[in-house]
Length: 199
Image 1 (cartoon, rainbow, N blue to C red):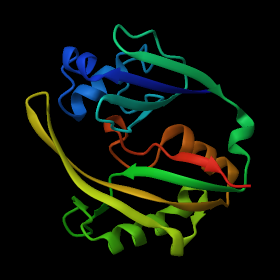
Image 2 (cartoon, helix red, strand yellow):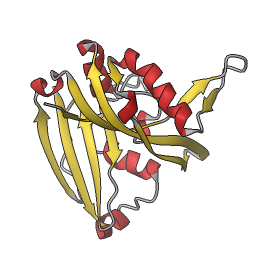
Image 3 (cartoon, rainbow, N blue to C red):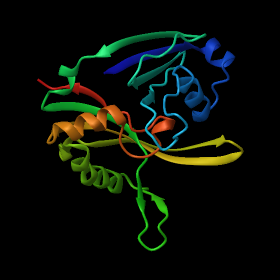
């Protein structure tokens, strides 16, 4: 079962919670849930989120495999995501993703820089996530670099916001992609496929 939540915080509430970067958002969202991984940090947390921004109100969308606890600040609205919602053949989508490719020689992850490279990479990866992308409609709407401090070390994530249309090619893989997220950086606001069925 999947739960979809909208978490809204006023500017004053966000200040009281010291929401200054992605890591503070990560801690806020994960603090709403009991950690059920039993010390296995490699296991998927069952929590995805997307920062939808906002000037006066900060809006977060959260998809989780268990219901969240009531927050001390802000307004949290949660509903069960109907299983039928994931059974359509076509969707419009938006996703923030961490586009990286492993260098064959060094073995290191290298961020992709150009919009065309990101779009091609995403289309190439889509089959493994159970869908194909309508390439003429695909937009790389934004590319940013997110930098924050975690545990005394600096973390840098390249982020790209993509939007377009997709067709489901493998229902099982697609449902896994939605429920577990896609790509890297999922603990830090990447990978949540925000989808709307197309009739």
